[in-house]
Length: 205
Image (cartoon, rainbow, N blue to C red; front, side, top):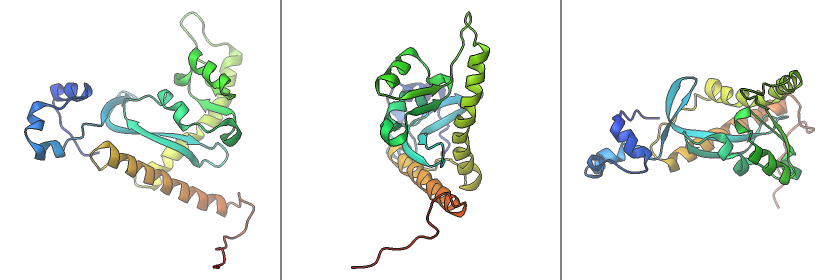
């Protein structure tokens, strides 16, 4: 997204959901500042912006639900918002160990989901060999979601947001998800994943 070049004090104020006084006195400057975005860190690299939370079908690699938040919101907090009912999207839920907690496991079980979330060890309770093996198998499925973001980055021009504000960012990210799905459907048709051989427009009444 556009470079903000904020001072540490300005970022601190924004993080507290406030606006620096100087910005409020200068409407032109405020219009160039994104006060909805937030900082996050991944692999020791800092990012400022928004996050695309997705639910992906493991067989087709199609995005079936999505939500946008500022970057500091962890995916685990949005999990329930992007889940379909078990009878619609399937009961198995795959995710990395950051999603796992006793409360999360109880919530999924109550809602009739089957948790395939990675197990995580503790300082005095390391993972058993069986748990490590189970996590490895789960990774084969979970890794497919990286293909989605890889396609967006390498084939769709990247996932950089060039707008200011949450509303515009959500529209841009939503369109990116849609374009990815269209491209993916074309691939699935070419690979004859679907049973039909051609698409026919309905007859006009």
